[in-house]
Image (cartoon, rainbow over all chains, first blue to last red; front, side, top):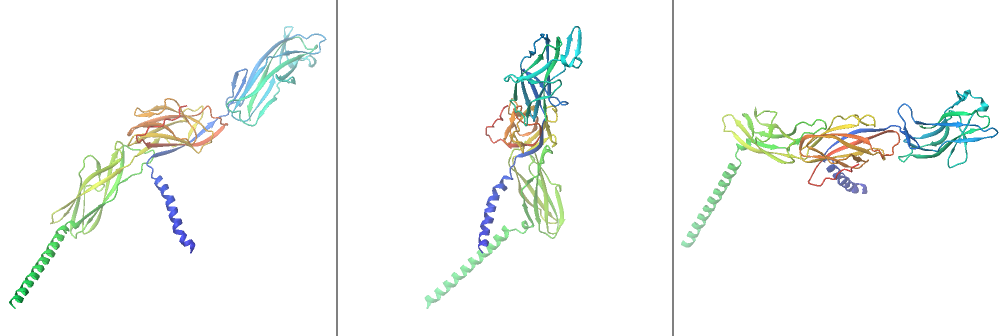
Length: 193
Length: 283
């Protein structure tokens, strides 16, 4: 019985609630809904000392190389001397998860009017390579054509980018290293995952 | 005794006078009522309903707007009859699909559909047009009644996009991210846009590549459009000569991850009621 008494009140309340919505539906403005889609393409920018390299469609990630040419004169009896590069400030801008790697090309040594590639040099006469972050004294080996990890990011960098820090290379020369002019390139590579 | 006899006669005369007066009154009332509700007039009863404006579907905005109404004419006779009508206002485009007359025999409820057409320069308001309805019955004098057709015109507007295909906004395809809109309205209007059902970090920049002379883009610079914010883009006067070509791009500041972001652009045209328009946020 109680429910029957309450029912008209409930119905009245429903009607009162629905009335403004009904009035709203009689708006006289014109409206059009256009479906749209924004496609954000993968974009990766690698910046080394302010020089930017943009990813393109056929190769995700950017490659930037810097030539590094030094004349090496081993000192007989001296166990190790070092030929250091300048510092490279590295930044990455990415709108997807990304990774950065470091490496070097093989070298050509020109000595006694002869040019030879790295693999043509006796193992014992080879020039060694290392890299480090400039705020660290910990030099790491840098093998030819290596993809040595320096950064892995699970997300985009945001608009401000990600500073990877300052990196430096050096060649390690000992008394057995063949004298000559060594030319090669170090590279930073970033790619999106 | 004499006095009693005179009194009786006087009463009788008074009664007769009252009877005469009452009879005259009844006769007059009867005659009067009869003449007020003349039987000839009852042969023709007219009623009408309100005009309904045909729906204005987006994308099919023609130069004229159509409103439809109906007159219901009740003809009460057993004889043959002819019903004619005449629209008395030459300012309006009012016609009937039935032509100008219809004929029949016997009592009938005749429906007269009426089409009232007007253009986009007709401002909102109440419009009235007289119509004469004439009933001719063989051997009798024709009956004419006048009726006032009433049309209430609200604010009307239609947005016509070049197509309803999905707008594809990319950096490298300039054409797929452009949208052409035509606007018809019968009063000063403002075009608003809202990005709906989108990723919360979505931010777009809208640039007006072209607008017709009668149309005013509200910003001299590209406009930043953020999700669920209603932005006024353009305004114009009544009429149909309004066209806009809008270019949409991702706002450079939007920190969006690579991928596809579906959303909707909701365009609305509203009447300007003498209020100052709020300008869209310039980017």
